[in-house]
Amino acid sequence: DTEVTQTPKHLVMGMTNKKSLKCEQHMGHRAMYWYKQKAKKPPELMFVYSYEKLSINESVPSRFSPECPNSSLLNLHLHALQPEDSALYLCASSQGIAGETGELFFGEGSRLTVL
Amino acid sequence: GQNIDQPTEMTATEGAIVQINCTYQTSGFNGLFWYQQHAGEAPTFLSYNVLDGLEEKGRFSSFLSRSKGYSYLLLKELQMKDSASYLCAVRVINSNSGYALNFGKGTSLLVTP
Image (cartoon, rainbow over all chains, first blue to last red; front, side, top):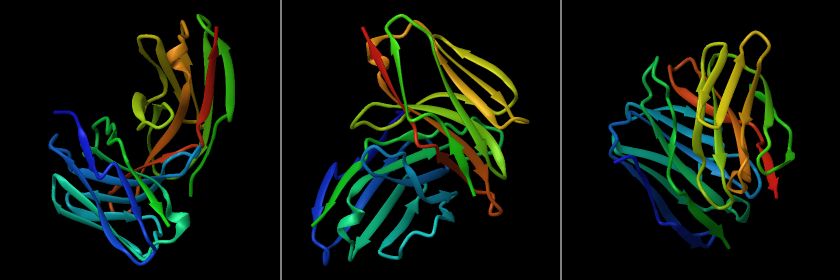
């Protein structure tokens, strides 16, 4: 199994809603990532979890709250978002071990629209 | 901080060879990756360099010079399906021993008949 699975694929929410994006991998990877990608732009790193601990937070607003319940799951909780937060949210995982290639495997993304 | 530069757009002919350059300035360098991304799809891994030199993988090759902060991706025998965005990405290690992959803006390659 070399897949990273993200749900939902599409999400429309209002600015007062609370929703969550979910990501799952069963490759035994110990590092998981959230990226945000706007149209015709490269992915921008948001969060990195290494061995289930948050290791990098790229100054992301608190309306985005990541959670790593276990080594296979990564969630992104959304609350009070703004229309400019509409984007494709990509989850990725990697071995996360020094010396390894560290190739990132990406999920297909969750396309979020904030009204 | 990171500074990763690559051309915005390139056009090449089917069957030809194209070279996409990438320059970077970063601290904590721990490897350089190339990803391919078709419109509306997730990025897919193409190649990885951590030491200087050329890595060849079928029609794709990637080169790295760490002293110059320079890499290129070489695509041979271009096919129409190679039309995509090519993302140069630098892996860095931060003080918390976390690895992060930071992407350049991407090069949009158009392959014409």
